[in-house]
Length: 115
Length: 114
Image (cartoon, rainbow over all chains, first blue to last red; front, side, top):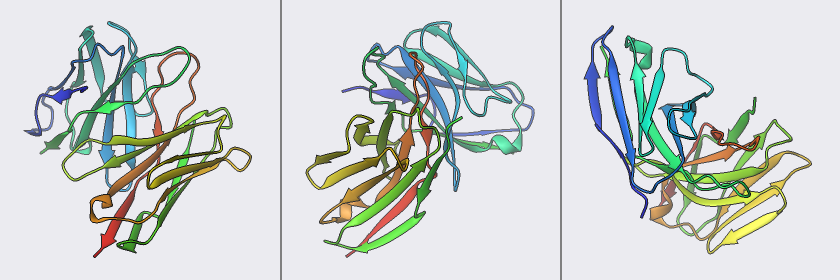
C-alpha cells in the first residue's frame, strides 16, 4: 500500500516563526502536492511538484514556498507564519502517467495553529 | 482557472436510503473527475472516478454520472450504511500534459441516520 506520512499531526507556532512541514511518500511517485483544508472552503492547492527540484504554483501560493530535494520528500515552508495560515495541511502524491491520470494518495494531515 | 461547485454542503439520510451529491465545473477542457471520501481524522481517499469519455461508472453501491454538455457530475450512493458517514469531495482536473493539482469542491458532510 502507498503510504504518505507527514511529520506532525498537530503543530503550534507563533506569528513570525519559520515553519517547516515535511511529507514523505514510499511509492516512488513523481508527483507531490500540498493542499490546505479550511471549513467551508474545501481543499485548495498551494504548490505541486512533478520531479525533484521542480515546483509549480497552485491556486494559493502566497506566503508559502516548497522544497523537493529528494523524490520521496516534499517540504512546505512558511517563511513567516501568520494567524491566517492556521489550517489543516494535506500532502498528497501520485504516479505520473502520460496517458491516464492517477489517484492522489493523501497523508493524514497536519493541523497547524499560529498564535 | 477551473471552478467546482458542490451541493449540498450537508446531507442527512436514513440508513438504507440513497444519497446524491452534485457538482458543476466551469472549464470545458477538464477531463477527469474523481470523488474522495474523508473520514474523521484521516486524509481524503479516492472512492471512484470518471473520465470525460464515459457517461456513467458504477462500483457496487457507488455510481458516478457525468454530463459534459451541462458540465455537471454526480455521486450516487445506494443502500446507505453507517460507515458511509463522512465528508465527500468532488474534483476536476485539466491536464496540459504534466502533473496538475485537482480543483476540489467545498465538500459535502454526509450523515447517515440510524
